[in-house]
Length: 186
Image (cartoon, rainbow, N blue to C red; front, side, top):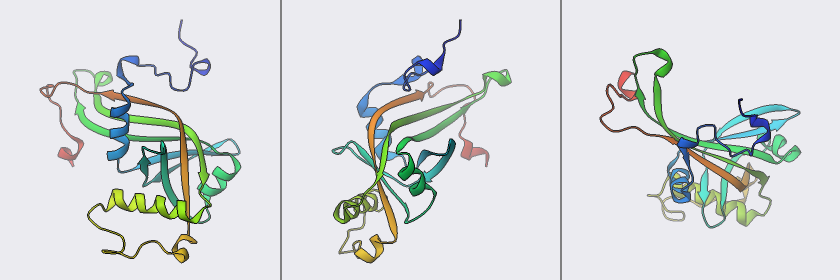
């Protein structure tokens, strides 16, 4: 008899053999992933937004920013429950039958709540964390002007409070027959 996934915990994976529970592995993927996908809801309609983000291990939170006004802000302000995901695609794995073709991957899915940061100093600190992730070779006050209040007034900065997360990975041996990267066929 098939499992009724609607009754199982939200972090329960169908493929438990691919589940990653190692928190250091999950944190490492969150630190290196360049892009995250935020899922919000408005009036029962799911919305996905692709975002630059930073994982703050000390705060156990994700920070990102969007336009001052827009769909993300409207959705989060009306319903703060979110889902956030990051992933990496590995090699494509050919097979003898179409159904058996596969791909290596690594992913993390986060469940929690999102809130717009209203405190100017906290919002500025979060933006500086983002800048440190994406431009670690540059220093505020030395290579660029730090965030100023006029700029802060043009954006919305958010904090995702992480409640639960789950990691998932499919990896095969390096010598998997015929494995190739997507980039190699472009």
